[in-house]
Amino acid sequence: MVSPAKPRRADAERNRNALAAAARDVFAEQGLDAPLEHVAKRAGVGIATLYRNFPTRAALLDVVLAETVATHREIVRRALERPDPWDGLTAYLTEICEVAAAADRSAGKTMAVAGIRVYAQLSELVSRAQASGQLRGDVAPTDLLCLTVGIGRIIEVTASMGADAWRRQLALALDGLRAAAATPLPRPPCDTFTARECGVDLG
Image (cartoon, rainbow, N blue to C red; front, top):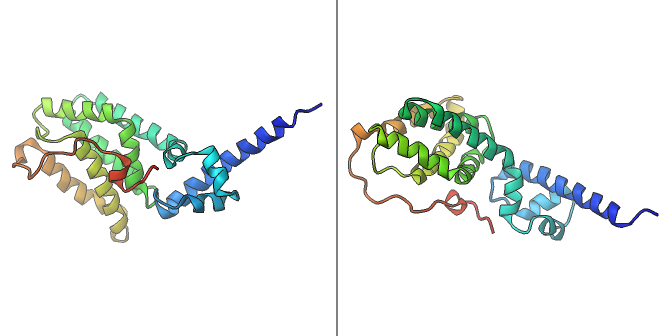
């Protein structure tokens, strides 16, 4: 006899996959803070089913952002392999923006949230550029994450001006990061940077 538990497990797996696919679409259309009820409706299940599979927004984002986190980690890895630390830093920021520019409206926040997952590597990228004397000494890894969110928004609002209009703003930002151009900053950097600072509530 076939155990009734097996069909239930298959149904649960289908629901989980449907929820993950729906979340990708809804977050792309509405942003990472879209109501989870919209995700459940798109997947054709009730909100209780969503919470059984993903107890928090963070759990759902872990699945949805898995590929983005992997991409982010690979970009940082390549940046750290560059012999010149400043080249590595600029390559990192440029690639992150290129990925965001080719993605959806939540891309800036998405890449910043993914950046939180590779924070240790970002810290190394900053430390190398500072040790070389090229990056101003008061820059923190959280500043790069803030910049990612900011450039993501710039990409969104300048899209009608051209696909690469954001490159001008990134170039201006990079000049501001150079040690040679440094002037005292008005306040210290953020001690931490969480998804909430990206405008995403993971609760």
